[in-house]
Image (tube, rainbow, N blue to C red; front, side, top):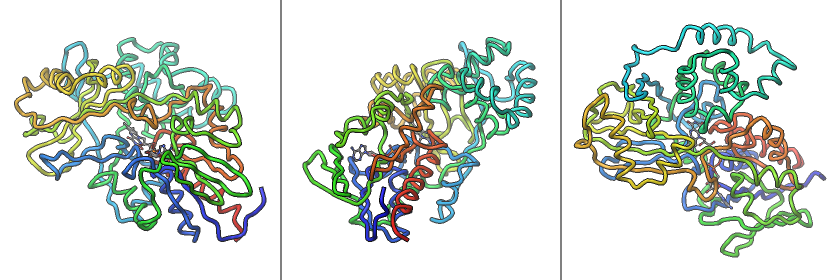
Amino acid sequence: MKKQPRPAHVLVLGAGLAGLNAAYALKKRGVEVTVLEATNRIGGRVDTRRFADEPALTYEMGGEWIGKTHKHVRALCRQFGLRLIPHNLNTHLLIRGIHKKPQHWRLHQNWYGMMDLMMKRFPHLRGRRLTELKNIDWWHFLMQHGMNQDDIELLELFHSTDIGESTRFTSAYNMLSEYEENGGDIAFAVRDRIEGGNALLPEALAATLGPRSIHFNSEAAYIAQHDGQVFVKTTDEKMYNGTYLVSALPTEALSNILWHPALHPRQKHAMDTLSYARITKTAVLFKKRFWHDDRFEILTDTIAHHIYHATQGQPGTSGILVSYATGDRAATIGSMSYQQKLAAVCDALAVPFGDVRAYVQAVDSYYWGDNPYTRGAYAVFDSEDLASQTFLRKPNHHVFMAGEHTAQFQGYMEGALESGERAARQILYYLKK
Ligand SMILES: Cc1cc2nc3c(=O)[nH]c(=O)nc-3n(C[C@H](O)[C@H](O)[C@H](O)COP(=O)(O)OP(=O)(O)OC[C@H]3O[C@@H](n4cnc5c(N)ncnc54)[C@H](O)[C@@H]3O)c2cc1C
């Protein structure tokens, strides 16, 4: 690829964190950018919401927690003056109808022994040992290490909320990396959120671009490259062109675009076959915080799966509990009516708190499998898909790929930001200094 003289004009597809961060990084270096966004809002899978009845309280329908090593998120928050607040939770259990308070449950002793050992050894593993961990899923890894069956089922409940699907779909390597980041703690509890809602971050990024840089309701349908230019046609037949293009779209959206010249068959195959985690979030606004503990969460084998206090640290008498269901549970609860969803949440809460239906003020729910651009929440790579990530990331002439699914911190807001910054860096490299 020849280096291009400035001035260049870059098209960015998608006003999620990846696209906005790419646009921000390019604009900072004096490159003109136009962002095309299919919907009428920015943020994509970052979706902070409020109930009309209680607009002071926020809850997250999409990306929520920020880990301690998520350095891009943290740096941008510092830059834009956004405050991070901890969101740590005390875990109750409700398994087979039996409620256990946080201090009243523990895994069997051999789990703690194995974890201590793994945490000491894991950072030093190389070569064949690491490959073995990448080639075995977490569930089978635990079985092979003689873990107690009840513990395996409990860990499946815990970690399927992190993976978004069963732990049978993620490698032992992935899970141990998560444990390493969280100091070996099963709850993966060291996490923050942005005060006032995570949507403040995409809003801050968008504000740096200027009002005319983002075109809403502009869904890319056709991408052509010729004469050193990239041309995009949207579903409403508008044409845009630029010197380069950053594609910051999820793979479902990418698969629906007509590409000319065609994408490399392995890249196209990787886009067409990548699975996204099934997640349903159901937020319930209650008139009273009957759970009392600001850090309340309950993990259950019922369909509600994981219910947590979403308005922790937000003052008020009313409060919001969110049910976070993943995998098959998400698909089942996702197909239910609002009344049935509410019943599923209230039934699970009835065991520790009695009948709570009288406190219900409002309900909101979203099954990410219904999202036309993602058909799920975030990409889930099994060990074979990992090789295909290289293809998903590969530039195509003047088109550079970004998005959570192309990143090292895949599945996170951090990954989306990291990927956008990388795509911008690649383009800046091709522009004359
Ligand atoms: C339920 C859920 C829970 C999550 N929990 C966490 C968490 O706790 N912590 C964490 O860090 N991350 C979490 N994530 C992941 C995180 O939200 C994502 O990784 C990140 O927001 C993805 O950003 P992105 O820019 O790659 O994609 P997106 O945000 O999906 O942005 C893509 C944009 O492209 C637009 N678009 C689609 N098709 C077209 C087209 N043809 N033309 C133009 N525009 C188009 C879309 O409308 C969208 O705005 C969660 C996500 C979900 C859904």
